[in-house]
Length: 155
Image (cartoon, rainbow, N blue to C red):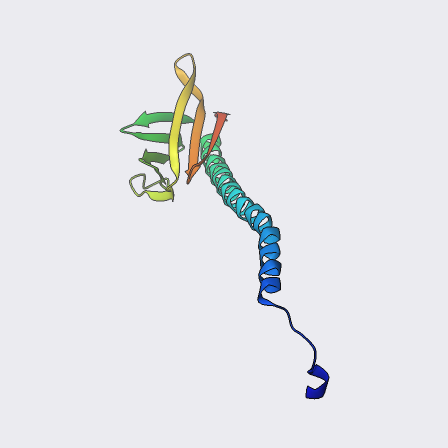
């Protein structure tokens, strides 16, 4: 076998450097493409997460509002009354709290730590509250998702 290799020449250092340079020129735009798309993927993932959380929170708030017969803001909270109990929502900084037991309105559970905006405005028909306008904004990193909903009480 060694006798078969005699007289065969390998690649020179210059040839190897030229090939390495060509490979680098070809791979550079491909790596830039993947890097740019990876950043876009992370931004879209944050946007989808914000939309998902905003939808989940709005669904919960809307369900409680639809079960209610009255609404009143009190001491920085939003209270929905139904029968002998009430549901309370409270927004502080970026956190949204909610009581899960209608009988114990002072026991609050954190629903989300990404809520940057939360507002409920009562809709009146004469002296009675007939519904609410709910506005909610959720932020993940720099991606924001805002939702608005109007709910009328079933009374």
